[in-house]
Image: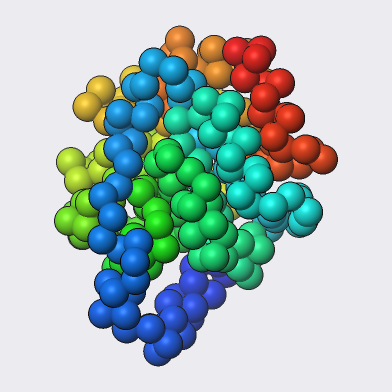
Length: 260
């Protein structure tokens, strides 16, 4: 059983527990549910933003605790000031030490698209994402079959949310591609063994149709890599622990962006 299998098993249990506490109607009645989402397309293409999707991430299964001290609002405001195009917030508690309160706190601090970084297996989590302030959801092809990708992405778009589809290889890309996603991200990290290689992105970029925003995810630790990926055809760059692993993520992203 891989760590990904364990995460998904746990996630399915968590969703059932959450449904027992709050029904869909409760989520739909929350103040943020009715808001209009910020456009991922517009923000990625904004001339004064840099394409970075910067992440607030306390921990991961492969690294353990990454940053237990930096406050959500302070970090995401710093990301916004550095000209990022979107912000990602982990909401998984068991493996990444995040929660939905982090998402809402980030929402209050930002005037940018906000991604709920989560292992989505059920429409309920998509309603949750909208209710807690997200503009974008993540669907991971490695854990969903093509029908699930289609149904979940169409449902998300029906709520006004944007969809980032994450793939790891050509087979996942070709079986999962659907018009009800807005962006396709290539994860350079293998979720089965957590090894990282930019070759994943470089091999797939030309196979992704140009109607989708192209995002490279993980393993991006220096500005030269972004320049390389941009030249290859990517418009978005999801960067997680590179900033969070420092003592001061706000200073880290500021210095990174100056070097772009």
